Length: 79
Ligand SMILES: [Zn+2]
Picture 1 (cartoon, protein in one colour):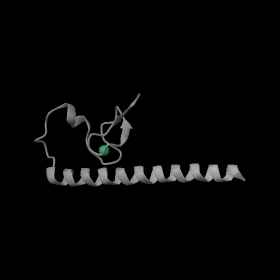
Picture 2 (picture 1 turned 180 degrees about the vertical axis):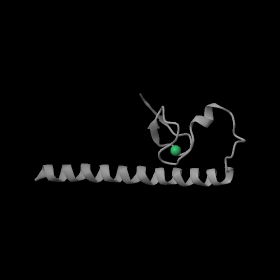
Picture 3 (picture 1 turned 90 degrees about the vertical axis):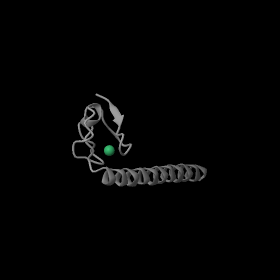
Picture 4 (picture 1 turned 120 degrees about the vertical axis):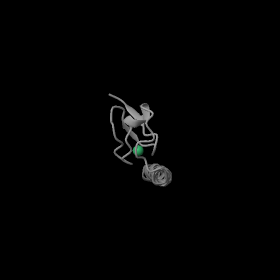
C-alpha cells in the first residue's frame, strides 16, 4: 500500500486506485496508451486547472491555519 499523486489534480490518492477520488480521472488508462478512447480533452483540461487552483487555495488556507495556530500557542504561552 502506498500513495501517489494524481497526475490530473495532484491530490494524494491510493497508489492502487484505478480512479482518482478527487477529480474522477481514470488512472489505469495512463499506463496503457489508449488516449483515443473517449476522453473529452477540453473538459479535462479545464477541470485540471480548476483542481490545481483549488489545491493552491487549500494549501494557502492550511498554511494560514497552521500559522494562526502557532501564533495562538505562542500568545497563550506568554500568559
Ligand atoms: Zn485526481
